[in-house]
Each structure stands twice: as structure tokens, then as C-alpha cells.
Length: 135
Image 1: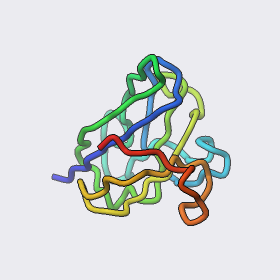
Image 2: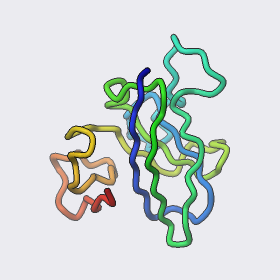
Image 3: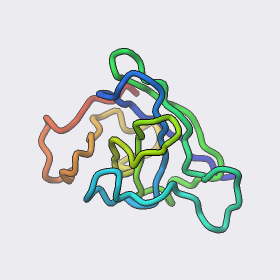
């Protein structure tokens, strides 16, 4: 069985529950609005799309942390797609922020800083564009 390990840190969000998902495209031209639908390979039938990550609990400081696994997802199939965080729990809006999924190291090997993906490519960014990982 395929299994993808997902670890994510968020800050600057409104304190409440937010829906989040893996979306089809890593196109951030129009922020989350250009990332397409929630990722769901056509060959897999499911009650909910495979890319549906349900909800994040954001604390009073606007921070959230997620660590878990998602079955039937292959990391190789996710590279270049996007993570989208929605303003609502039910994902009825176009999303408040998004980031491109990338992999620069093996699982558990990247204890460095992660790009907050504001649209600047990693090659154009400076140290001020990164946030420390909580891993």
C-alpha cells in the first residue's frame, strides 16, 4: 500500500478550524485560486478526494502543526502540486494561501528552513523568505 508522510507548520492564520487540501496544480499565479481542484487521480474511486486533508486546528497565536500519514498517495505523484489552506472548514472559498509541494531531501533528513512560498522561486529568495521548521 502506498503511504505519504505529511508534516506541515503554519503561522499567520486566523484562529479557528481551516480546511486544507492537496490540489491538482502548483500554479500560484493567482494564489490558491489557480491551483485547480482537490487532487484525486481518476483511476481511484473514493468517497472523498485523496487530496482532502480535512481540517487544521489553528491556535490563538495563528499557528498550526500537522504530522501524519495519508494512505494511497505516492510522494512522487505530489511533487509540483500544491497545498491549499482555506478560510473555511468546508473549503467553500477559493483558499487563503497556497504553497507548491517540493522535496529536497529524504524523509526525516530536512531539518533546515522551509520556503513560505510567496511566489518567489527558491533560487530568487533570501534568508528572510524562509521560516524555521519545527521538525
